[in-house]
Image (cartoon, rainbow, N blue to C red; front, top):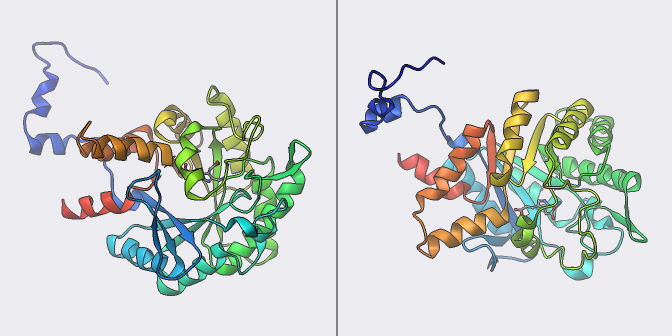
Length: 331
Ligand code: PBG
């Protein structure tokens, strides 16, 4: 780019009216960029507000289906389903994770039956199902990698059996993408996609989510730092993403979102594969509380999502998806 200098060049010239500003706009947010994460619980006709995430609810399956229909009506292309499992059903092994009749699998079957055109994403990780709240198996004080991967493979196949379109491993075990790809293929699921939470950081911004799914209160010690990445690293993120792509990930994700847009940019430039970012629960809560408390205008939400696009993301997982989709529809 070659720029002249003032006064012949006046960059404000292109900002003088709405029509010109729209004409030169570099990046756009579209409803097709949105993935809507939804929480599911047992029961009938239940809509349960999540205290730490104003405006976000947990839904029983029948109500979840209504939300899925809403997603279709708004033209949101995909939802991601997260379960809150009853405490008495959790154990040290997390074996409920691969039970074909667990809450997630039943939810996927119901949603796909009602909305076959909506893409459904499922998290692969043990944390909603383990009593200790870790994403993997705990032996002594260690999260054991390979034993965990074996269980994650069963979890992924159970979800694919239920009709899940996109398997999203969020556990950060080494080698899980290759193993899950092989397990899916062996079971005839060549077309089931993998969206890898490839660069997932050990972040304090997940606080409200752990409250929403009722996991993580008992983590103790290093928390998830022995498997999730240090917020100080970005070269390492590129290594994680490179490995996941090599092992068969169709799409990759950076998480959290807004504090990690530099990583999104580096990842997109380095690999050019479909790259998503997760505007996580803590980011949602900050924005929601800031708007609700009158600290800043609601436009901050749209601005935050446009920033993901500017950074190079192909799409964003955001709890604001229905709000933004309806705003976009009105434009
Ligand atoms: C579980 C998982 C987490 C999130 C998505 N999947 C929490 C964690 O890793 O502790 C966080 C999402 C959010 O904060 O919105 N593996």
